[in-house]
Image (cartoon, rainbow, N blue to C red; front, side, top):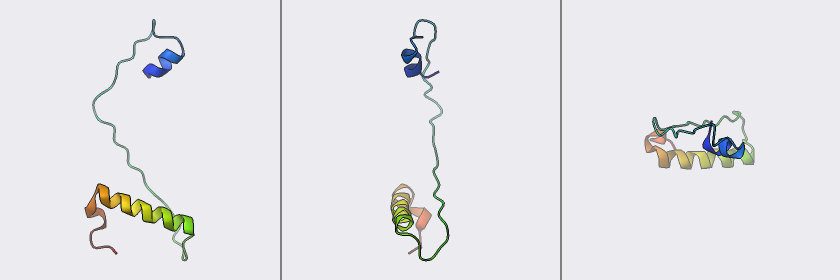
Length: 66
């Protein structure tokens, strides 16, 4: 149980919260958009921003793409 939840429920006397420090939690997030032309303005903007962010995280992801 998270420490904050135990505090909120007033259970700090009966429940002990032990922080988990390893392994480090890593989450991947994907983006799925329909393959349509023309792409909607919102989807196009979202894909553009996702590509910018992806290249800053791992430049090899878009090596050779235009």
